[in-house]
Amino acid sequence: MSAMNLDLTGKVALVTGGSRGLGKAIAMAMAEKGAQVAICGRKQDNLDQAVLDLGHKGLDITAFIANVGRSDEVTALFQGVENRFGKLDILVNNVGMNILTPSVTETDEGLWDKIIATNLKGTFLASARAVPLMRKAGRGKIINISSIAARKAAMGMGIYCVAKAGVEMLTKVLAVELSQDSINVNAVAPCVVRTQFSQPFWSNESLLREIASTIPMGRIAETDDVVGAVLFLASNLSDFVTGEIITVDGGSMA
View 1 (cartoon, helix red, strand yellow):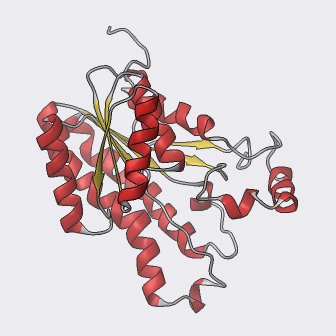
View 2 (spheres, rainbow, N blue to C red; view 1 turned 90 degrees about the vertical axis):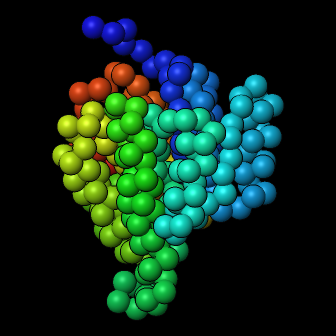
């Protein structure tokens, strides 16, 4: 039996949407655990800032610009990862977006496509491109960032809820399909996390109190709360865990 720990030394990890917020926190934690880490994002300025910030902490991060909702850019991204590192052990599908809408049926088709492409199609495309590299390595870990919105409908967030529900079923399907390749596929589903992505929910004190009142532990999540679950799924501690959704919500869905 191999030593069981959270050490990621010798592993290569890619975190999509890794230039800010939760993705940046995940990238930093994985690098601190010894992994060689690549991040991707759509804005060069944000990527450059992330590389600079993490560099100040003594962490060497490689950045690629890519829109994961576009097949050609995802193909180029994974070619870049292979050229740079020669392999891929861990993929964290973290990219996500949400635009509040009055209702699903009153939503413009273009907006529907954009939210679905970023949250669901992007997870599909990145996972599909990662699989050949992981098969070549003999094993791998795919970790999808979902949300409790996948299982709890919310006014104004209908398309996001649908997209994240798709991410959770995609997680389970891929877990079954890829188990014979020793590729574990799991997801982490947090409640509201204090990042730039969710700032409209926590920057308003009265709204923050209202949200916190629905959470048994009395607060929203911090990035470290989610990072711990991701590190577990990336490490050898979870080698017999696949097809699971780890809910990180302070008891909201209990």
